Image (cartoon, rainbow, N blue to C red):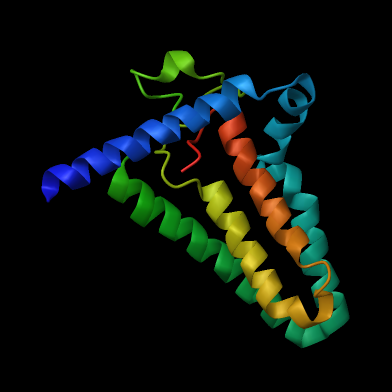
Length: 168
């Protein structure tokens, strides 16, 4: 029924806010306060992105250029789907913008972005990249491929830790 669905969604939102407060305000330390704002910054990761693209192009030639193009397409698709479908479809306020919740947010950035919270494009983009890398290079980097997902998870965690996204 509609009432049961609404109650279920309210309960999920309640758990999401509870987990947010735990990650953003209670399970904190000065090292994460200093480091995690950088981990969620795309400019911080730019040298890694450039290294990956140059490494691929130098080692795989024309195939590497196709790989790079598909890599960028994956990134663009994840970004567009997150921004145009999820964020505009759900219109969930960021924790740092929610007038009923923002006083409970420990914001570690200079300002709170103006876009919506669900979903985090940083998280979606990095998980998209991690999946693309793992699918295309699994046979070559089988033992290390999990690092791409660890990287995406750290970026996602940083989004919550700095106060701009809910865990969900």
